[in-house]
Image 1 (cartoon, rainbow, N blue to C red):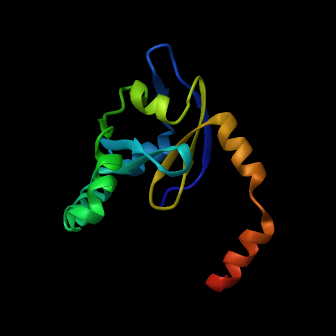
Image 2: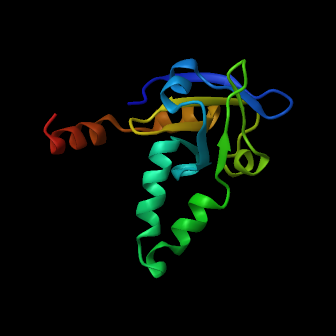
Image 3: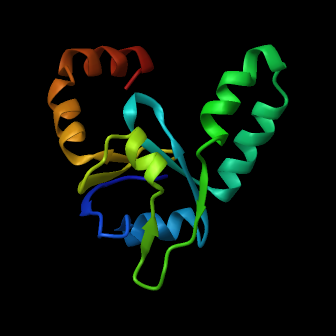
Length: 139
């Protein structure tokens, strides 16, 4: 399970220091792709392969846009010795990332957000909505 919130900055080459704890859990190689709500998502190779198999088994009419969204900009990354990963310009543009980012654990995957977008999104979360969802789940 991926948990935690970390703040980092891109260097001039578009690399970011990926949190050690999350790197260990994702593995030596992992995938970064477009995520939902304007963020990027990172998946372990094992999770990525399972998701790919599920998507491949869907009817073409149902899956074609999902395939395009998930796979067109997906990048396999290998952290360097300093723990940095290169985030492609295409992905940085998609997520409107400039310099400062938030890297968060999101249970079964990791998300990368533009820092200001992440802070604004968190501020907009309504605790009553969260409480209602928790009640519905029996927490």
